[in-house]
Length: 160
View 1 (cartoon, rainbow, N blue to C red):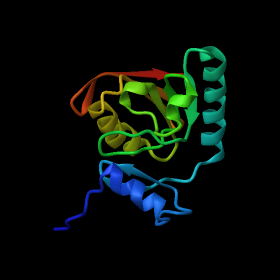
View 2 (tube, rainbow, N blue to C red):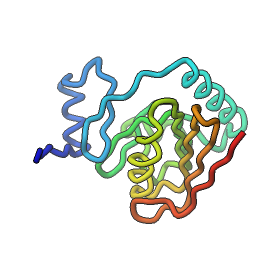
View 3 (tube, helix red, strand yellow):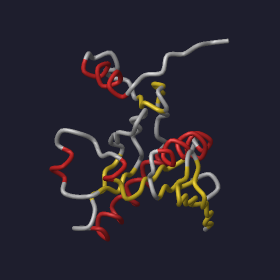
C-alpha cells in the first residue's frame, strides 16, 4: 500500500514561489499535484470559440478566464473556462474562489474520465453551482447542476 502526501493549497503556492514547479503544466486536484494533458488543436479551437462567444454575450455581467487557476479548499485547478464575477481588480491578489464563480467549463478530448469523475466531485464539494464538460469525442455537452456533497444532483447530456 502506498501512502501519498496530500498537499494543501498553501503548500502548493510555496512550491510555485520556490520555483519547484517551474515550466511544468500542473494543477492541484484533491491535494495531489497532477500533470495536465497537452491540448490538441481541436481543444484549443473550441475553447477559444466558446470563450469568445461568452465574452460577447456576457460583457459587463461576467469575466471569462481561460486556463487560469481558481482556488478551492484543497485544489487549485485550471479549468479551460471560468465564468466569474467582475470586476477584474478583485483577482489582483487572489484567484477566484467558489463564491466568485458563476460556472466552470472543461473541454474534454482525452481527459473525459478525469473531467466527469474527479473534477465534478471537486467542483460539487466546493459548491460550484454549474459545471459543463464539452465532450469533443462524443460531440456532447454534459451540464452538471445542483451540487450536494461530492456530486451533482442534476446531470444533463446535450447532443449535437
